[in-house]
Image 1 (tube, rainbow over the protein chains, first blue to last red):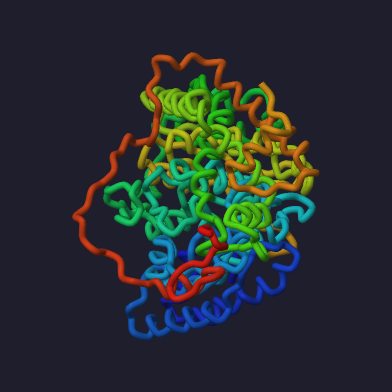
Image 2: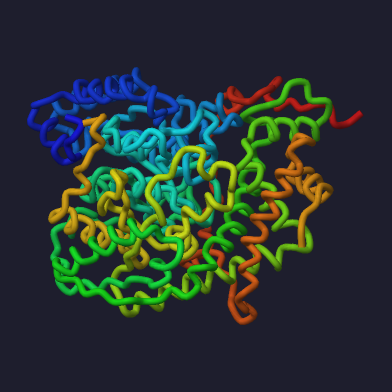
Length: 484
Length: 95
């Protein structure tokens, strides 16, 4: 039951072969069996899940059920869920019960899907290994001594181990795509503004974007259909119609022009990952695509630029956590300054503090031009590189991450080494472009993803390209032995 | 340029973060490593480049000035650490 696609589950539910309560209970049982080991979930909402499932079953009886009605899913614990703890994996919000739903949560609930619980993540989405969570690291189902990637590591591990058929993630510098690569999933970061950020706890507002994490491209299209759309409550939400993302899945790739940026295949890329990507590209040639080398000359600026923009915006966004209106408050503050400083000092973990301090420094008097303004200019250069490339090619392909999953603890003490895990994903966030990671093969039993980058609002094309590849390969169907 | 102990203390104060005295050298090392990484931006000349604030160069939408939210003070204050008679309580600020 847990190996089925969303469409297959939908058919079973609509045909009356299974009820939503049975299906939901099946996944809840799997969570009970495996979560102790994987730590993929921070909260499991068993009672409300079964109530939502019962409501879904009533819709089937009334013939008012939609395509995704009754199918279980999980939300990254960065999305506000009314009446349910929303921790962002931080001690700061350990007892925070959100007073309202994020738009994404509202939309997915309106589709009839059932929320199983809230998934683990790096604290405030800052990390690439899920090791900065207040609730402890998540284990990679492919090798439990290794990280699942981050920051959406709990969502990734939950789907990889089939504890949920689908989940939401958020991607500020690679947080959907990199864990998808490390856990053998299909993950899509949409164009900036495509999915509402309302109720999604802000990290870096000009980069954050939510998207689907699933086992395959068709499932991602179904979930993106539900998640996307204009929202007046998000001032950066884009007023643009949502196409049916499943409509073009079966289009031929004959004549598709693929660009391979030479900067993505240089030093730092593990040879075993390079080989997997080479083989995947050949598969696209067999499907009728043409391949040419391109250049994104400012790629090396991406990480330096990101580590100004993201910390600057996070230092501003996280200033709302002050121990006054919600969140952690220190014991017996002696004055207001002490209240702020100790509540924040106790509530935030090390990586969050580092980023707040870098951002505070970059925005402090006298440094703005040298850091933030310079970074916004570099951002323009990175974005222009892409626009130039898209004059010649339809999509850009390369590795999602430079290596397969690394061992827990390997990079935990070296922030800069950890930052390099996002070297191929960050520049799409800086440019605001959609990007996707799909399963492309294995090296020493560990999965590696192929990244596909498109032009603005080209999500349907990315999904089409991914789906066609998944018709001729079965990497996306591989499940770790212990979780079959 | 390199941040020393007093720089780290000053930044922590600006950010309203209490950090343990014993961890300052570690923060100084990590922040300096990150700033060294960031320094690579200076390799390119950006004098003629306009800064990018939004990927799609979108502008803020305007809306009619009408009431769109209902009063939910009780709900919002139910998750506050300390409130009294509808206000948030903090240590005394005015003598």
